[in-house]
Length: 366
Length: 90
Ligand SMILES: C[S@@+](CC[C@H](N)C(=O)[O-])C[C@H]1O[C@@H](n2cnc3c(N)ncnc32)[C@H](O)[C@@H]1O
Ligand code: SF4
Ligand code: SF4
Image (cartoon, rainbow over all chains, first blue to last red; front, top):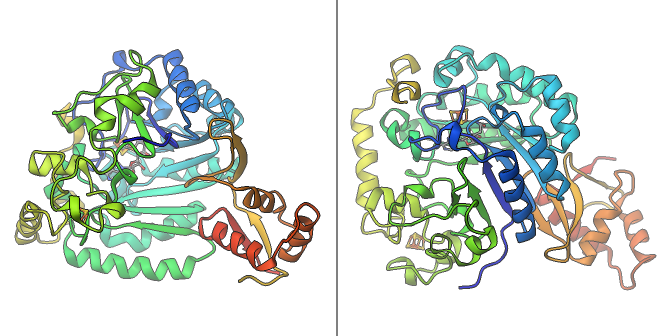
């Protein structure tokens, strides 16, 4: 199976982060600071990525601002001709830092927000985060860069989606991504407390539809609907090894940010193998590229070019084999796993306030 | 189809460039990347935020033959759909 060159690189510069979002998709076993790539190693990754075809670099983490060398890294990626996107919680994004980063070539900022209500937002973040969002958004606007606000939706904030949309307007966002939590990493561990009810999702959907119409032409609203509740699986990563690669803080190169969970695969490291070789030839990137790996029902399904059989990580996590159909699909012989999880959570759920959610806070787990 | 007097403008954060790897003009923007063909590139280069659709068509006719206004409008509508350009009301 031949592949096209990648368009995007998700650079997870660090796993360090001052927030403790219980929905965080980052791995439960975080890479320690000592094992993070050095400035030069990241520069080499970016240079190789550009030579390979990458045109968009997402500087993310953890909290990318926790890296002192962020301006150098941004400048290097921008100097190669890449579009540079900073993905941040905003903690530490002062006017001074934003001004420097913009001068070094950041093109766009994606700011995550936990909730509209300050107390609730701080409770979800596990720290005083809410107050920083306004100053961070102001700093982005002051340098004239486009701003995307990203909000992960779950049981604890879905009911205030209307207020969240208003907050994004106040922050001056050009785009708002309302993304229902995907269950990987910490989110998978906290799934029981994050799982929304069908009623919550339907009510939020009505609010979001109305807001989209009201804001058309002013603020673009992107709604990523809840995966387990959806009628078909998501077209995960537009296909395995098709458009994007992720480099983890320690240099592990992954076809998607969660792929490390697939324990049956071996992943290469950018410090020991050329990136181009990893993209085109490695076991991990070729394993589920294209359609040859597919089993029934995907193998003969007419949607296989649309959703690529869903998410390999989810298939692995919920069925034990990554080459199985994503069990979110009703055609999957394992679909009962997903309906079981939904029925189970519905039977136990009564609406609760965030204080009673009983998230397992990340800080307790470290 | 937009009115001939409508003015397309590049959205905030949109950047035109050239990719030596693919040997193709590209447009880079917050949500992604598009590889451009010659027509789309020429159209985008004329989107200065001041020129209307019919002025852009005139500009294209100075460079190319057989320029059709409906085709230029369609290219711009596609780029508007992808959030590369927006239409200014005039
Ligand atoms: C992992 S964070 C890292 C960057 C930075 N700390 C931040 O929060 O923006 C990257 C993006 O993923 C989003 N995210 C985190 N966990 C998620 C989940 N379980 N499902 C969907 N999006 C998630 C965050 O809101 C953020 O926009
Ligand atoms: S989602 Fe939250 S916990 Fe995870 S990296 Fe971003 S700010 Fe930190
Ligand atoms: S069977 Fe496979 S290809 Fe068909 S809809 Fe389900 S996941 Fe998609």
